[in-house]
Image (cartoon, rainbow, N blue to C red; front, side, top):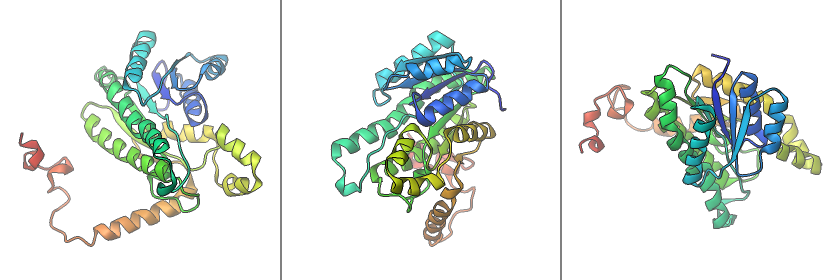
Length: 286
């Protein structure tokens, strides 16, 4: 699958940046688009309409579940259903864990983790309905190369990094929980992307430009890779080759520690594998 003709795609955090690129890519593939953002997305919608797209938007703070529910209702009222949810809204705060203001950290987790859960939870029934009708049904959670390990080439963004690790866990569990219903779930894991904010940082400081620009990708490139990977069923859609080295090192370190455990179970012996006997799970007894 590469086209989205007449499909309905919801993009949270879609007013600018990667979110707007996802909305534009979806529209280019034939989708009708609903943008949600805590900021004014009217300029984004007008831009999409100028390119021939059918697009709407609703101001939505994904950390507030009631607002996310209103988004589902508005999407159904306008378009009749939903096929793809790009769970993209996110924020960041710089600094080491011990230096970040707890109030700022709370907001990051509220948006990046709880907000991501809210969107999956609220849209799951609609996506299950679409899958039952034989239509496309997908969730694309926007993570980061920070979902793949702690990048050594950037200053500490520790709360953001932790939230993007959580995005990987949310994606893995959503994939398991929704797979039986025919809903595909993937994680988008880009590195540096030339969003409006990153372009401003680069323009303001030559040192920042030297640190970022050689490694950055265009938003359109990331968005195209996102949908290609989603339709292929790629679990983690890593887009930037510069993420490979540290992510692979992190994976090797993790596996080395795990492999130090004694080998007791075969690959299909554990109830939590999905192919084992779930009745063996102590949490399934009730």
